[in-house]
Image 1 (tube, helix red, strand yellow):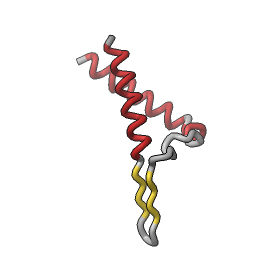
Image 2 (image 1 turned 135 degrees about the horizontal axis):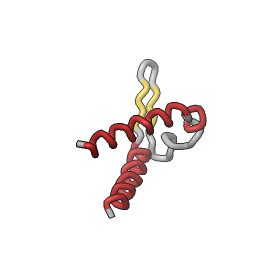
Image 3 (image 1 turned 180 degrees about the vertical axis):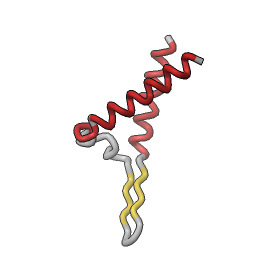
Image 4 (image 1 turned 180 degrees about the horizontal axis):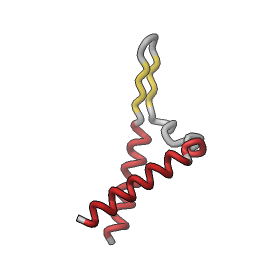
Length: 69
């Protein structure tokens, strides 16, 4: 049970830090990679972050893999 508490506290702290540093984090090119599709029509705007999702998946997979060892 303590592991879940620690995880929730760490996730909350990470969300807080991301919120505080958002003005600087928003300038990074993450989310606007080649392979991210944006469809703009008259009344419809669709954004499909395919490449960003793949990069995030690989990074998180490697991070959790290294943490398990």
